[in-house]
Amino acid sequence: MRIEAVDFFYLSMPEVLDVGDGSQDALLVRVAAGGHVGWGECEAAPLVSIASFVCPMSHSACKPVRDSVLGQRIDGPDDIRRIGDLTRAQSLDLLQAEHTLSGIDMALWDLLGRVRGEPVYRLLGDRVATPKLPYASQLFGDDPATTYALAQQVRRSGYRAAKFGWGPYGRGSVADDALQVAAAREGLGDEGVLLIDAGTVWLDDVALAAARLPALQAAAVGWLEEPFISGALGAYRALAQRAGAVRLAAGEGCHNYSMAEHLLHHADLGYIQIDAGRIGGISVARRVAEAANAAGVTYVNHTFTSHLALSASLQPYAASAPGAICEYPVEPRQLALDITRSHLLPDADGFIRLPEGPGLGLEVAIERLAPYLVDVVIEVRGRTLYRTPVLMT
Figure 1 (cartoon, rainbow, N blue to C red):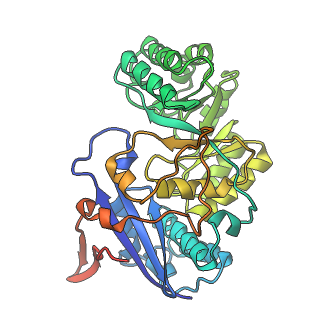
Figure 2: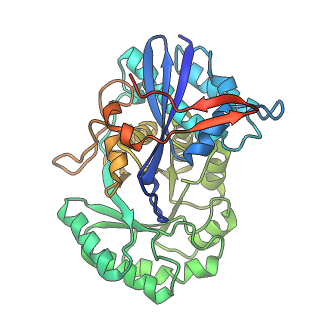
């Protein structure tokens, strides 16, 4: 088969709010080859990612992503990896390329799985997919009372783990943050797994992050996620030495393998969280999962958008130890829910199980997407490089 078409669909809620919620818009990718179709999703600014696929060449190492994808053979997993390597070589100086490639890579794995009648995780070499314990991932409330209510709702909904992040956390006083963490713990209950996400709020300031450790330790928080930006390796290592039982987690900001490798070996992480929609797709995420296992660092998915992205993000570590945790967005915008006809829902035991259907195991609900579709035209020197495709199977 040869790749005949790569189509991008920029979807958005009617209003995008200034909050840390990545489910307000989406960039779906549809790849066609040999009469088959696969779907993926980029976790990045949609318009910029589209532009990186079609932009004119700047020089030999700054070519549009399409030059490495269209017309390429796609007959097996090695072809998907080859296309990724070619893209990285030809778009070396096109910094959005990895984000754009991520959705394409997902779609290629989905397509190949559909052709072979196998779920992606089997194409990756895993025989079984073990159940994952979902942690309900959501934003902190604006105040401790709201956070407490959200944590209670999580508990009533049957989740045994929850993560609260962003919002006001880290932006006010140490005392304010302590109240937020205590409210989350009280609402969730003593037996629940509680995780906290600082959203890189302290950049690389170890002292500011360390001041929050006593409250995290008192609440038996399992991890502190992204206290610093991804490249602040020394800051991560210094904080880890003071954090005690609170392990550090990071990695969602990695947009290539080397960034993840540096975190694995130089940041003293307990957990590395990889977003398949950012790092270059399922192919690169799988490499990180294998490297994390070798380094003794626990691999966890990062997903805060659709269930298509959720399925893709779980494939790289499908065969993890039973009961391994996974990020599970519990308050996505309606757009994210409408992307697929079905969803990965907790079973009677509270676990998430990967679909056993071919590819990513989910069907894109094309009929629901028209209200969200953003009409985009990109023209250069009077030539149309991109126009929003027609939504059709």
